[in-house]
Length: 150
Figure: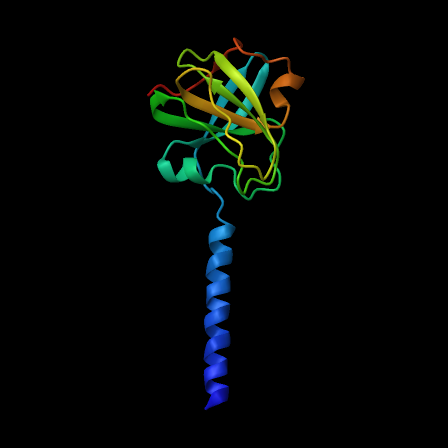
């Protein structure tokens, strides 16, 4: 009888572990992409335009191609802040006004909970690999074109 109970306990523990690992490993997959431009640079951006896609963002990814990123699109302009909890790669984020001009750019360290916020209410935020913007001399006032109109 005890062997049967132990087996059930082990099976239950394995199921709990597997389900918690699945939740921790959650990654946005199959998101639509859009091509953006920043001066002479082309960007393949995944669209995070739903609450669930924005919540997961780039969590648990271990790499991202050089000219790829994630464009967060919100329904309303506001002070949408970002953090890097469960995000494995360091990122740069550009907060973008409706006219495509970069409002401000923040460098974000992996696995941190510091808030990174826009300096003005925005509807768009573009995450790229760390220092992607600075390495291309893209600064506040630079324009990101190709943003979807909402």
